[in-house]
Amino acid sequence: MFAKPNLLRGLLLAGTVATLTLGAAAVARADDKITIVVGGYEKQIYLPAKLAEGLGYFKDEGLDVELLNDTAGVDAETEMLAGTVQGVVGFYDHCVDLQGKGKFVESVVQFSQAPGEVILVSAKHPEIKSAADFKGADVGVTGLGSSTNFLTLYLAQKAGVKPNEFTTLPVGAGATFIAAMQHDQIQAGMTTEPTIGRMVKSGDASVLIDMRTVKGAEDALGGTYPAASLYMPTAWVDSHKDTVQKLANAFVKTLKFINTHSAAEITDKMPKEFYGDDKDGYVKGLDAGKGMFTADGVMPEDGPKTVLAVLQTFKKELQDKQIDLSKTFTTEFVKNVK
Image (cartoon, rainbow, N blue to C red; front, side, top):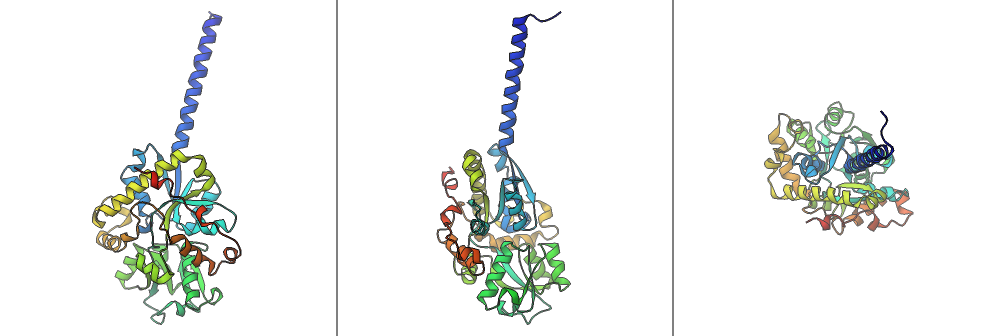
């Protein structure tokens, strides 16, 4: 038998309402699914990303966050600009650099106030005693156009070595960086923990320039140098403020955890593969460098000027344009965290 007209209309209406309800729920779920690419999430400088996940702070905010791993910040930046991810955990200096190219992205949570990086020198090359000795050398960086590349070029130029007088070689981080130095593909290089600790412990390298602390950054770079951050396209931030606030809530809570717990307690919350068979070394490295992290996610007041000054040393496009630093970061969300 056929359904009566009124009954049929009722069934169709109910089906339509159900479809719209399911569609709205799907949109809500999609809006709360955030993909963030991390420029090497095993690096201690980007520790807040995996720590927030491990502590369950994303879920506490009702967010479904997927963290993707990439070995170099410049590649993470490319993915964000292509629209395949919503944000990047990487160095703030990309926000300044991109504005010089007419692209607007901003740090929404500032993780650190120092790079957390060092220049290591191979034990095979004791003749390299300062950045002035980079002339003619191959110096390892995570990637060309990466923050390690920016900083290496600056340190060399500050020491009187021009970019065309040495080579920056993209060798990634971790195992690839270690192999490059062991095989003499690079004579020096910029890297972070836990790679630093492994190479110093093995005797393969020693620290030449140390930027793991605020003082170290000030000595090397001339001021506070905000580095690791969560940065996102400004247009996306402006159109997804509720979601960005939830991310800020989770990350500020994570930064407070870092600042109120020991390196050993933090390490216990990290994936075991991050420290492998050398948990003590991981803890030691974190203990020495965790002072780089901010306590509240707020951009250090004098930091952006230092970053711009460093980049302008060797980037002509930033010398020729008026950069509006106020558009490279926001404190709106971190200051709203309760």
